[in-house]
Image (cartoon, rainbow, N blue to C red; front, side):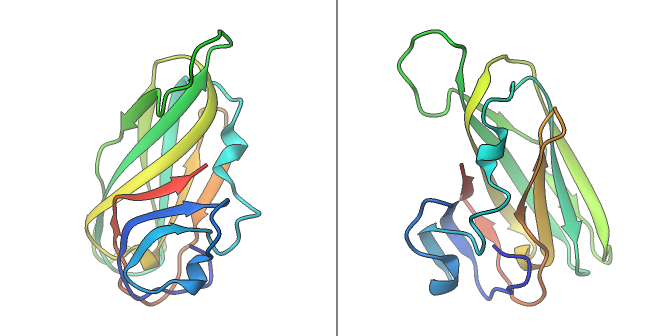
Length: 171
């Protein structure tokens, strides 16, 4: 989702994919299916491709509103160890702890980490979110790799009442 657009509904099994044919702005709530984000030319998860997966990956959430949220998240990775093998879907899946954003914490940053001890060169990274409660429209999301590369997945916006269910940001 873009940094300046509000929403008005849930994201149900939504996939944000820079290669999708339909922009999210052409969809309507509840958003189901594959959509390009508002600006698919910047902040791509493919910016992580080629990096080692080893180390601490960080989810950063900025709360623009005063609403609470409970967010479960996963990193789903395909790797290449530079040895011939057939590619499998999601060679590795790592689940982070639930990140809780409490009420009345406007303009606050929250973080959660996943420490990856496996090795491999990243070929594909997808990030999945589920929300038990809260409103994604007031939250901005970014992922930071162990090597400091940061990708903004969605900027914080005003308005709406959207929540994520099985929502994937796709490389």
